[in-house]
Length: 241
View 1 (cartoon, one colour):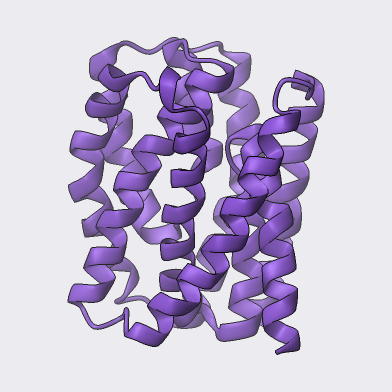
View 2 (tube, rainbow, N blue to C red; view 1 turned 90 degrees about the vertical axis):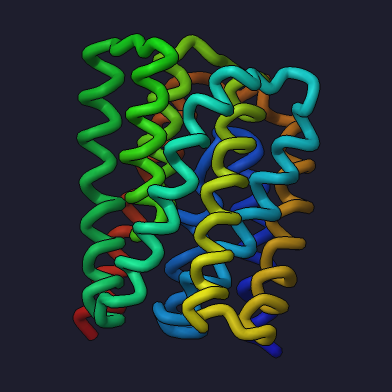
């Protein structure tokens, strides 16, 4: 019971952070789930919770979704995420921890490199990004630090960015959940745990909407880097001990 209370408390805070900066819930919560349930269970639990978290962001900003960008990104991203999920289930648990940890740490310099070069994307390039990031989402789950600069480079901002990025993420994570279910990695107990964790993320997301317009760009970048650094180190620590 203490473990569940801790997980739900982190989920509430993670949902609030995600509601503010557009990503971060999986980055914060996944190490806690890995520690509490192990990597093989943590990934499907987080996949269900991520569907709910992103759905909350869509509901909070429904009127400003860019549906053209959504279709362009999600159409190739959904089958790519399913392929990535199949790849994930073939990996040993300790390799998952190490891969996730290294991925999160690598996102710190990569994000800043993308921002420094001020890339702008067209609609067809958004589709290419959707396929690549969709596959990575299937494997490592949290690719928000990659999708954030992609949608910003397309020209979206604030509510429109939060809503559109979340809408595409919902479709990718549903694809991943269905793949887990098809391959026997999503029994009812895991699904219910995901719903429970997801409810705390949803609550936090609606709280975060209150603060979304008040966060400066500099603080946004610092907060995201801290999340990536802390989660990356904690996952590598879990894998090596």
